[in-house]
Length: 68
Image (cartoon, rainbow, N blue to C red; front, side):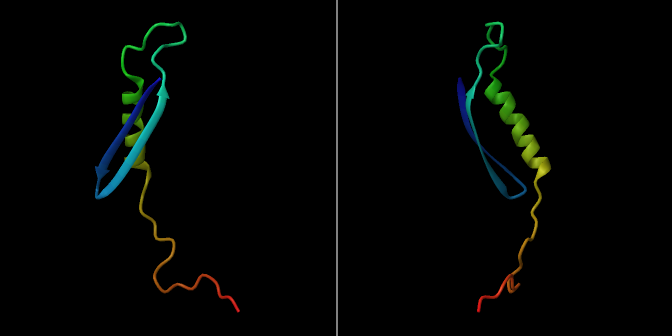
């Protein structure tokens, strides 16, 4: 299969994308008319750009637990 490593940046955040073994041939044995690794990479990056937001889980100075 085809492999692809790509990076992207949006709004100051950097993304790394790795696709391994994307198919070259369809189930009927004919080649895909486009490179599936590239089309899937575009879909995954769009998903990452739209689906992730920065969330504050713990702030500086917050006490999570104490150990005696």
